[in-house]
Image (tube, rainbow, N blue to C red; front, side):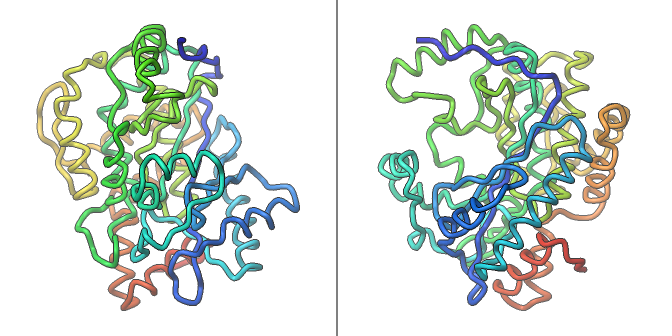
Length: 375
């Protein structure tokens, strides 16, 4: 049986999903609070969508489908304010960040939904270790072929999104020396990594997916944890490498950058993607995870080694005309300022030193998510 047909979406529409941490304000550890929070939020209209995640110390929020950065940002700010108010009623803090700095996986509780229970039975302790927090960005595609083209053309830029969003330097109470340690947990799953190289939806659907389904390993696209995956039911591709930023402003800016990049790539003025582009993919991804903006990457076509920070700044400048057309210029300006200074991983390390404890660092992340001005 082949995969469902690829739904047609308006080109370059976009939406955001954010996985968020629920914090106990007495000790700043994770709190098993999602059932209570979801119950409270269900009492009145929510400005987007909110759902449980695999453990009870997480929730996921989803924006609507948008065409412009300004509207997406406004909705994310509205969602944030609604969550903060609900959290205040329950005495629960809410924040971004790709990992909680000192939670212990063994203490987490699997949410009661059937899919989460099934994943827990399959993956054992890995399911609880999946208490990590990422941002996913969807981009609308007019056809499955465009989706596969974009998916593979973006491989060159995946390190940009890892470095710009990195916010998970601490795990189990220790500085990992990675800017994004979260992705190391994702890599433990057998269906993670990159999608197989094919540029045609029919081949992906009727050959690759059909074979995988026949093995019994795969039932749907949800079973793939790839860095970028097609979502045929939505008519999108989904970028999954970003840590959840500490602010919704950074989250909206990342979406605007991806939208501008996709517009540029669809003009097909760059060399088309090739399977050999992936020769440097894992190394480049490691550099972005380990060193963030200070990493060095290898260009997949020329094999030139370059500064990741400088490559990001150069590409942001190149994407400026696309962002202007799309209404995303403010988002790219936000990322340019970040790339010239530091990412959220650097901010968290600074707060750890300034506040003097991991608990103080979490408190700073909560206040930053609320939109409070901080140094």
